Image 1 (tube, helix red, strand yellow):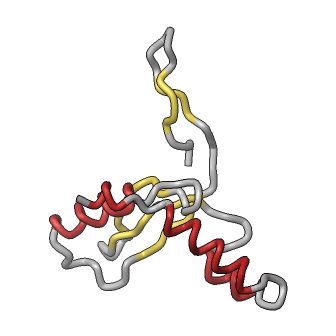
Image 2: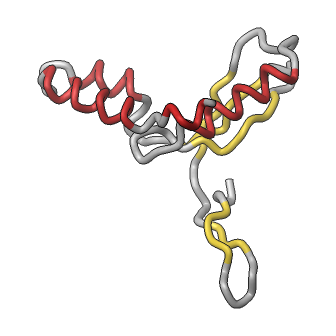
Length: 113
């Protein structure tokens, strides 16, 4: 992916990109018949979840079978579940709770209304 547009240049008034970056597609199985209102709501929810503690979300697309997929940043260490599973015994419960607390703190309830 070329990378997301981040800054509007002051002089040229052109958006600049920060990329290229690797992305991953997360598919919603059996989502071919989801109505557009639900898809719009999913997009809004994912945009609200943007914070430094959560995976970057760039948008949605469809696969060849018309299932919806989220376009997200690829992380070399895998997803949170894999990281926690591999870190058991290395991370203490206090570290895990702190990590989850940070994630939940990044979800602003004002953005859901």
